[in-house]
Length: 180
Image (tube, rainbow, N blue to C red):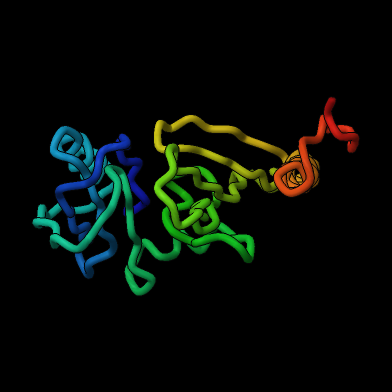
């Protein structure tokens, strides 16, 4: 009965890798923190798979609940049932319940707090529309439709133009006229 297990997830980094086997092959690797390893192995067993706990390599960074399915394993069919948008990272969509693009950091090459990231997401439902999620290090999230994102892009462009003009020529009141 091998299906994708639903793993517990938390924001902690994974410290344990669990290899998922069926009778014939290694199908996937699950990653958990110490607190969620027992629940994860129980979910793996309920999915009809064997769990083998393995240590994490020091250079591997994964979050708790991450599941990587090997494309040559028997669980690959469970992933291919999901059609992915062109921009999707195709990594763990079934467990997340949504497609994700690669996370894009808003990096200014300076130490600025908070660190901000943007990602394109879309629920797995066939009629779901893509959305943009913007989040910071404190897990503050803002979810915008594509239309809202487009308008925000133009508003930010306008604010940047005002800031640059004000920086070079005097201050602007936001309506195009110098303040004062």
